[in-house]
Image 1: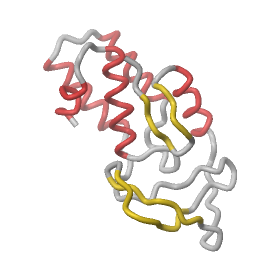
Image 2: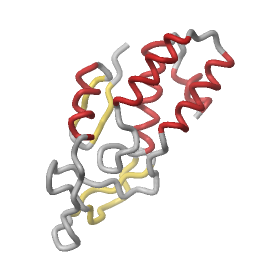
Image 3: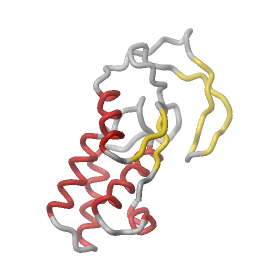
Image 4: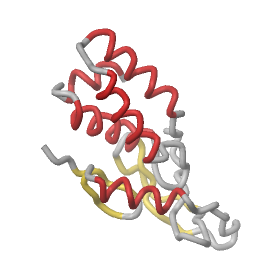
Length: 142
């Protein structure tokens, strides 16, 4: 099953193309535009719009900085969840390695490219890709 994920730069599938596009954005060193040049954009919380807020953006790549209270979690958080899933279900070392490599390549900790809700969607889609588990089972561990 191909899942769609919404990022500030567009809608992409969880294929290798998606991960490649996230990698290109992750290479940017992100320089803030400053307080005068902020743009007013919709503010989201848990995937819902909550009105408008001034957002800063990167002058190099153009990505808008995430201002929500849902700050991205570290990749270690998701590796610990993967270890819990591995303890409860029969998962091979190869599957675990493939999932961890794909999550590392996605650069989950970038404030400009991804927020907590999008991290969770990416994690669930990646686990579903390599392990035959429904999404509600994976979300139970989050």
